[in-house]
Length: 333
Ligand code: UDP
Ligand code: MG
Image (cartoon, rainbow, N blue to C red; front, side, top):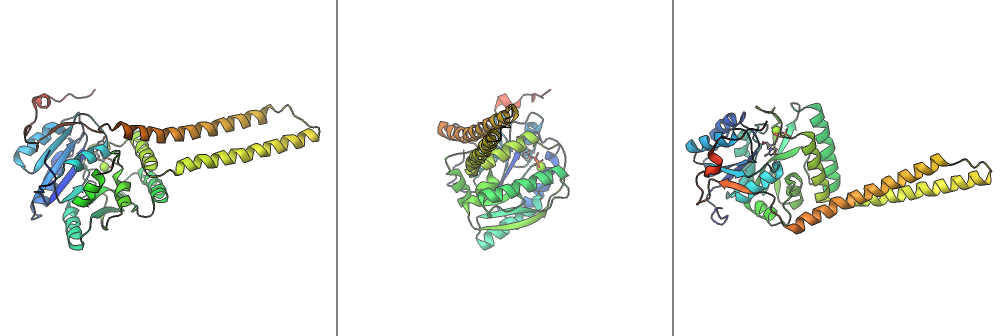
């Protein structure tokens, strides 16, 4: 791993990618054009998040004719945020831009971000999606709910509609690296740092090729990590549920007493069962919430790495791709 102390590149561009063979040629040609005109030394870190398609093979081909392209291959698919973490850990640039592989974020905005950061001495420049009309209705609505919730939990420093297209200064990268846990949700962690920041707005384009790698399951996972990683508010929700059920119980007791004194004691099965089920459900929710947090504490305590590097083409020893990776890529059924 190159030591961050000798910063050779002004800019590192980190691109997590998972099974992006369709979009890769378009990405490389657009990004390279932008970076060649930057007038600064740069490196591009393609973080291959354990792709099972031809991504690794294509990257190897592009790397031969584009020396600034560096490939960091993870041993297995570890998820977008973890791939981003791996890229940030290995980047050496004075500034680091993270961008998706699918060209939904235009690489042409990178020079503007860099210029803004340098001229105003900013540590963070957010890419703000001015227009999401190309996203599906479901994606837009779920994103709306997500940002509303995050702003309530983490605070108004979270810019709405800021995804993972952003620039970070070396200081901001080091600050995120210094945190003990590595299950980061960067779109919350970066605003939480509170470093001087600016914004660049852009049109969110349609995915240039290929399919989304964020199915509903991963979106729910991201939301759960976001909530438990930044707020203990759900634990307080448990208290409120408890208080609510207690009040409901008192209500029930009064009702039954009144019914008893009036001599209209009904067999009472329905009310009894409703009450029991309700309290049971509240207790299970509360235990589940506690479990979420205990689980997080447990993973942090274990100090296990979140990713394993297969190879890094910039590492002195393995400047070329190890033999185990050069064979035909195994395609999934
Ligand atoms: N990605 C990744 N690992 C994963 C899933 C996604 O590295 O397990 C990458 C993906 O290749 C893309 C970025 O994360 O560069 C964002 O994913 P995608 O565009 O599919 O998400 P969407 O824009 O649909 O939310
Ligand atoms: Mg996308």
